[in-house]
Image (cartoon, rainbow, N blue to C red; front, top):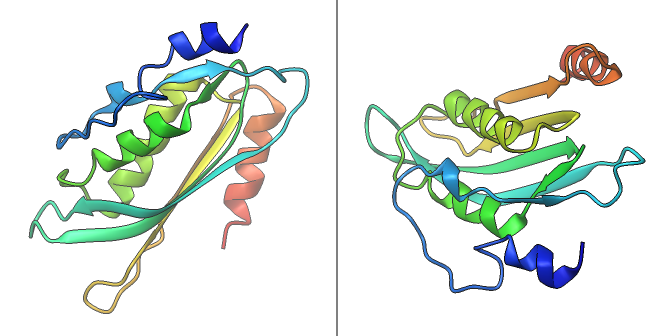
Length: 153
């Protein structure tokens, strides 16, 4: 696929940035993985994630770490940035944010394997670091998910 054709399928990349103030998984976009013949890791570190406590409305800050092994589709990074920004005024507990991000990315890409970690800054003297992972059922990636989950710190 030519770069011009691929770029035509992406609406966020290369265009003016428009931010939304509501949770918006529809902002996520994909492109084709040109290296489907081998496994490799893709990792995103998103150090400026913000959401709201669903009870108090106070802001919560975190670094979100996303690691995945792509199959056919990959997430486009600017669309991921805009999607994560859409949590800014969204009220969810830390654990819900991490699981929601992982499930949205699974629905979008159908990766072989994915894990999402939230490193939330302390509030009330407690830090919360939720972790969720997924490996495609019936494959070696399901076993990878079990192993990484069992040895997660």
